[in-house]
Image (cartoon, rainbow, N blue to C red; front, side, top):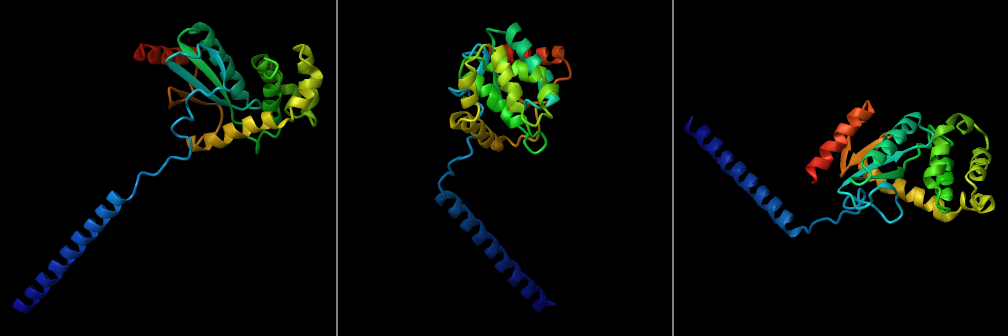
Length: 222
């Protein structure tokens, strides 16, 4: 019995030594390892960028960012709601549009984003966006949606030839692709996805609910 107890104590002692050494090794590694630089844009992805499209007050303390897909029917609905919010709280919020075309399920969404950006180069981003959203039935299944968007450009009295060049230009495509790339750090699964002051919110079921959320953020940031 004494021998067994002594053997058990012997193993307990060495087990304790191994655990302590392991903890010391972990602590040394942690102290010696410098902080990892964040290379996924987490620090600035939800801050307003120079090339963002904004409604409302760009200097507002409350920033609503909507990741949207022009071919998404729910994005059409929420686009109207956020525009209404920007109008009602024009001095108190900034409403920012970001592209997130779901290309695998919405084959014409990316070219729709390009059309809006091309119009934006002639200061008609929001107007083109409204036409694209409000006429989804005309282009979502069209084989050559550029034809529809070119007609929209004419309705907006844009320089149509410039629009036809810009819609497939590198600057337009690069901006959209960069927004998609940067947003991967946010783990966006669908559209619309809405952030207010960096906080992801559940999509409100009505304008009144949306309005109440905005009012709460405004009050908290006064």
